Amino acid sequence: MTQYLIANWKMNAPALPAWAQAVALACMNDEVEVVLCPPFTQLAAAQMVLTGTPIALGAQDCHAEDKGAFTGDISADMLKRSGCGYVIVGHSERRAYHGETDEQVRAKALAVLAHGLTPVICIGESEAEYNAGRTLEVITRQIDACVPEGEVIVAYEPVWAIGSGRTPTTQVVAGVHAEIKKRLHKPAPVVYGGSVKPENARDFLSLEAVDGLLVGGASLEGISFAQIVSAAG
Ligand code: PGA
Image 1 (cartoon, protein in one colour):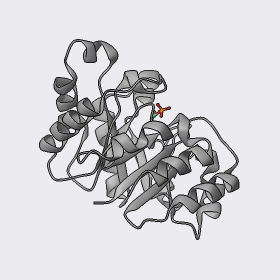
Image 2: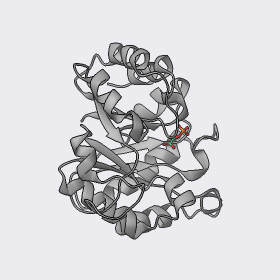
Image 3: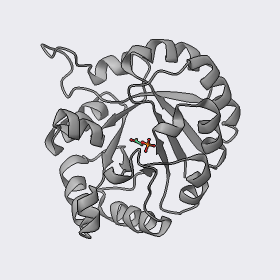
Image 4: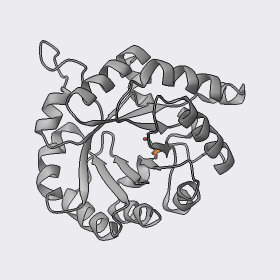
């Protein structure tokens, strides 16, 4: 099965050409799909730089409607026209800072699917929920509420692991991914995200239930993300 390595640049804009060159050199394997999700303002430049490389383009969010009076928003239709093949939806930072609900995340995922793109739907428990042993209850509820039928990717991102330098053990990740796979309407790739680094990428990628990684901080440097890509396949 293909392994997905998705770079989420968040609100950061490193120089594209050097990044693309380093990462493209690491894409030696047809079984690995590498996706760059830069800020919206860099999509046009990224599309040019990535043309002719094996690196695909994605976006970090979209609106559920195709067009209309939604100041500051971008639709899945626009992202498709900008060359995107993937759209991250429901990232915990969107849920926390923009109040996105499960219903909105599902509507966004449906809009992405309607345009023939692949939504990368993020789910994951908070630290309090993790400590209370409620992880499976939370992710089950989120899958039922946010993940529509269709060709999706699910990203398991424990909120407490994002940007913190802390991760669940590989045993926990394997167990949660197995539960996610059981709960989905049909088989879909499930990627792990949260403090992935070149040092731990191989540990997660070697788990059978892990179909790739969603990487924030360590994706900003081309060399560091290239090391993560090299750990796949
Ligand atoms: P991180 O972010 O790799 O910096 O922890 C992951 C994410 O938020 O997708």
